[in-house]
Length: 312
Image 1: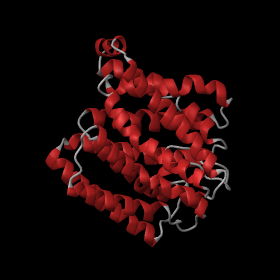
Image 2: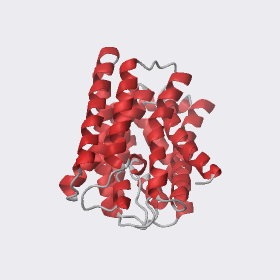
Image 3: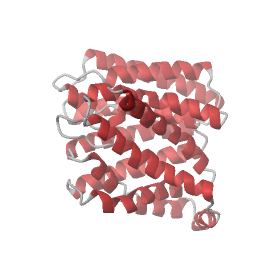
Image 4: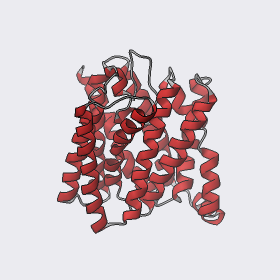
């Protein structure tokens, strides 16, 4: 991999990690469900005119849009608004790899190898350590919401694999159109029209910046750059860079939000990242290496490319 391509891979991981800090800042301007709806609205509206018509059946776009956009992101934003730290959220969400492997084993009959099974146990141990840390220092309910978001992410990964879209960015843009109305409806029902309207009336440059970052920098640039890298390098070369996401997530939260990183949290990070690496970078029985990469963290919630090009 050329130095410029290496830099781009690290930059995408950094963007996805810093995204959690930006979300935390945005939650100071918007109710969580409204913020999530605005994120998808900003990502979808301009982009649909650039990517062309959808290239898979609408049933897959709708299914992934509801599970990933409404369930996964709704739970993440609400959990973070309820007190789940940004850095810890970026870490805990990596357990989606274990949920993906378990669901794929049940639905797609992909039996995990012994190394993968060991990786799942190690990652689950990391979640246990993180739960102990959060239970002693923050709201456990918010922690469980983010774990639930990781489970929804795992479901969306399997749905995406079944959809097998040929163009990852096209698929993700059209998926982004689905959650907007359900999230807005949930926001009106649970957060109230008065709070939503007040947030929109108070919109300033910082609030606008957070929406644009999570929509265009994290989503459009992130997916586009990752797919560009995977068209030029083997998936096994690009995939490990996604393990840097929680590193940047925890570091940026500590730097910009003043979040402390306790010894227990470092221990949880080591267990989770190590376990996810074993789970996602080792092919399951009966799978090709390319198929294994498609359930890895960088693929989570994103579309697989053609067989020779897996995309994150």
